[in-house]
Image (tube, rainbow, N blue to C red; front, top):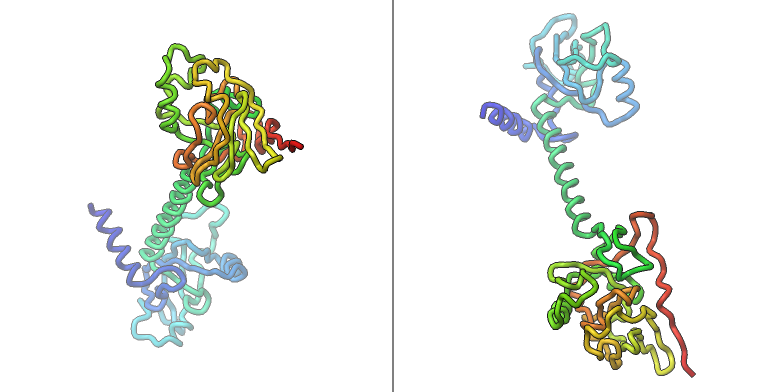
Length: 330
C-alpha cells in the first residue's frame, strides 16, 4: 500500500509539473540534494553533454550550488539571470555501467544554460511509466487487430489436393468486407447449416470422409467457383459458370468417391443465379470433397476470410487453380 501511495504521489506531482518536453523545468527551483534528470532531443548537444558527463535520462544528484564563489543551498530568492550564471556540481544518483563512469564526479554544469530541460525524479519516472503503459497498450491493440484480421490455419482434409495437402498451414485474412472473395479464391468458412442437414440425411457410418461425419463446429477451406450474380450449375459432378450464351467457366474437380450417398441432383444441378450473399464453392479434389454440389450455395455470413499465402511446409503465394478453365462453344 505504501508503494502504491508513493507512486500515486509521484504521479500527482508529475501531473502538476507536466510531461515530456512540456514539463516544468525542475532546475528553476534547484536545491542542493535534489534528484533531477536531464533531457535533450538534439543529438549533437546530447553528445556534447555526454562528453562532459551529463547523460540524458540519468538521474543526477545536485551536490552543490555556487554563485560568484558563494555556496548556496537553493535558487530561492534569485532572479533568472543569476540562476543562469550559477554553477552546480552534479553526479549520478546511482552507479552507472563501467564505460559511463568517470573519475571526476561531480562535474560542473550551469543547470539552466547548458541543458535544455531538467525533470524532477517523480516526473521522469511517471512519464516513463505512462510511456511504457502506452506502448504496451498499443502493442496489445496491434496484437488484437492482427489476431482478428489474420489467422494461421491448418488444412483439415484432403479436399483441396493437389493445391493444399492435409497439415499444410496457410495464412487467412479477414478481408471479405473490404474485398469480397473472387472466383478462384480459397475461402475459409464455418460449417453452414445446409452442410449439417445434408450430412444428417444419411447414415454416418456410410461416410468415407471422416471430416463430414460430424461437421458441426468445424471449419473448411474450399475454392470459390462462382460469386453473387453469376449463373452456376453442375453437370456430371463438374461445376460450371455460364458467363454468356457461349462462354463458360468450368471447375474440373472430378466426381465424389461415393456419389450414391447424396441425391443425384447434387451431381447434375440446373443453372441458377446466385443471390446477393451466395457463393458456390468446391474442393479442388472433388473425389474427397463434400461442397456446394451437395449442400448448395455458401452464405457469406459463414465466411471467415480468404487464404492468401502458404506458410508451411513451403512459404509463398498459393498455387494458381489449374482446374478452372474458360471455354467458348460455337
